[in-house]
Image (cartoon, rainbow, N blue to C red; front, side, top):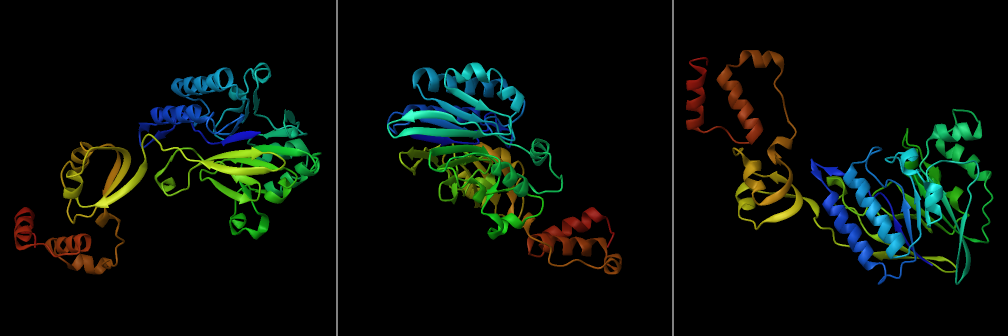
Length: 364
């Protein structure tokens, strides 16, 4: 059986004031169009379906159309959980009825993980759905000391489960999973993480929450967000994961080009004015030593989805600062000269000095 592991769709997401709904609609259509070629039998949605607990109508309509096409046209069962951005109660609406149409939605944590068992040519496959939960949810469910960490609580929770490692199984979950204390990131204070060792009984773990497509350890993978949702994600690896689950789970990658890319560029103002029209989401850094009036407006004529603009000189750290006593001993014009040189790394010209002297009106 071949699953498409999707996660973190964040439908309705905004990027620097731009709605990404058109980009998301395009991407989901590419998925629908490619299902047959990639021989996909079922869909995994590992949380964060929406970007907000109360999604926009556009986001709801887009997800509704996507699910309708998957179930009624492509005949693909869907195994879906809620993430930390979703409203568990809203996403859970009519879930019992939808399950009869093979749209399985799980949004609440229960004492026992109950499998959804499907049949394929290799026999039975147990699918478990574990939605996003907080440490307080586990404390209430287990009735244990509130001072236990998330990792300790999750370990106790998994000890109570009866997962047969001899059966083929797949877990869909949403959260921060690390390789225990051996992973340096697991030592970061305040991060609620789960230990990957507690998931060893499952043949494959389809994770959501982290936006880069990557492997935690063998058979435990983050699907990642299908699109870049922040500038600092621009360098991340993005791909759809196909889980070919026969006797064991084998992983393939499916790459889809987005409608618009997200990235930053750095050059001089004149350079950007000479470029051809560009519809990508671009943040621009200008190398010029002085500012241009209405620079963003002019550049936006070429880069229609300009995310923002700044000057690299404004990002330089100040190497030195005058003590207060020295500041008081300098004239206003002398302080301006020092300020100008600190900011631009060159001294003001004679013409500029003359203008300043005139503006100061004899305050030397």
